[in-house]
Length: 629
Image (cartoon, helix red, strand yellow):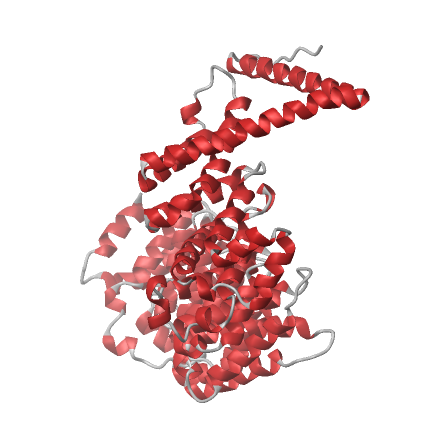
């Protein structure tokens, strides 16, 4: 209670505080010794003593401008004289207090008062060997502590010490070396704390000092960027390197950029990690220092390096080396955002990007789609030949067909390989490509593609029609993709139909209504057959989404056109069903054994369906038992 009352008095600006402090300081230390602070720093008395000492040391009566600006000697009689002027404790008493703090800072509970006292001592710029030892402990806690608040406060205290305390070059280098080593700590939380501390040091260091330590920070950070398994740590390291590059002068950035270029040209069995590091660094350079990348031949050199990597990965049969390709594509995306004029006329890169739309790895698909989609969104498909005559879409023969074909391949995947973001980009780009094909069908194919299309189809007349109307080929391909079972695949195609309906003129879609209605109607029929009579079909997405798409098609193309196309689709379905029944009846006569197997299989399927219905009804009523027949 007395400590609490004393704390209230110390917060007041009383003129008697300096005179009483000489007695209060030693008295509080005696309380610490009597309460066993060396072995138990969590008791209320110990914590109360720490709080009172904090108020006493940080009191404004001991913080006169003359004392704040004083340059403190390290040790000896002068130090004791200075302490007597700025602190309410003698040098021996401060040594005893710091020894207690060595154990107190390691405690997880009641750490606020302990760290508050350390900050108060640091604000006086008190120096002793015990304080330096305490700072080493604080640095370890900034990484090794299991509590995030302790890690954060420890980092803040050590940063304050590093920025404000006078120290020699050797001591400074030792501290920086330990900070850099901490980014290799075993656990992710500790590494993140160490990276944040390095970022704070980079941000607050004077520029001349930072210039002298630029490579000291840069090289370990790059090594961690490549080797760290944590996504959060990789992102934090990348941000840290970006901050470093933003603060450095052009000459220092040029030296670091030279490292990245040499790593990209490395060869041998161990060259792949170095090439991946350089590819990630190039992207960071483009983001953080576009002014430097634009200087001289730096940008053209980057484009050459990226194009060389793309060329080596085409043609592709497997996903080997996809990480190097991915980082180079990310660099290409950043280059296209920062310097679009640099890549707009480089048809080799755009041709490679179109081919990479069909790459097996989803990350490569996605970044390639992002780059192409972002580029196409800036061009009006109706005015492409006039405003975008220099575009790779016009200059590369058959480019529109290749883009449409590869994007359809992205949608035609099993549900286990489905990626929502990739599908969304594909739908957006297919919509643009369809509009461009409708306006400019003459640039959709080159001679080799048209010939290949004819040979693969087996129907000369039909293929010729597809070559003349590339939109028919796109709709046929999308319709065929949605026919096999697969919820995500069908949903993607149906969304594509809806996007086309909202962005295209009705007369452009009417000729393809049957192709769009057929898979949508098939999905509704198959989902309805699997549902129980008691189920509410309007709430099932397998039925609700296709019905919404049919409604959009009807609203876009008109009821009359829609009903005619819908009738034709149903007529074809009935014809196909009747034909299948005739084949089954014929099979019973010509191949009784196969007919018997078919009948047994059908009966087994019906039996399993009845079991599932019974189990579903029991589950609805809360029963977990299942009857086996």
